Length: 240
Image (cartoon, rainbow, N blue to C red):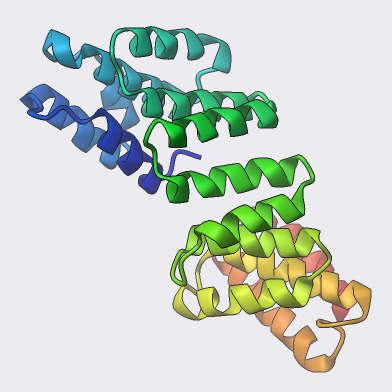
């Protein structure tokens, strides 16, 4: 959930007008996903303490701290002047981790109202809607925010199409991604899922060319050590 793009968005909200050397070092650590470095107290000036506390919470979240220990420091940071948008982004992430997807969506919508980028948060909202079973809503969110080269949102749109029983549409979204990024494990898995769904439905995926394509996708997916490789191989075996 803590992607490079999300880190950039958080830093855009938290960055002081004239950051100290200590805050700049913390921001660089965040951009480099050096989360262990963000936990230590590095002596930022008092006016940067609230924003620095949010970055510490981001690090603890990324390193696996439980939701119960994260929400209170975020609320305290907001009371001390930290960016409301950044705090709402992280509160939404905590809610999502607890399985409270509706609350997470509300927090992310509040973050957008407070100035966060709707496009950056759209993948998180789309994922939460998919977890709630709202494929149509997830697809609409992703489609409204997506740009032609926005891989994160195009993948969400493809996932929504699969959930809606539209595997051919999903593959049309995924194929250009895989041309540009043949080692994109998430896109490969979605293409495998769409191909198998089409095969089961007797539509796209049922003919010989599609079965050959499925075998190729699975070989690529195994090569990049995709987490669902065993299931992907089982599906490919069924389609032979």
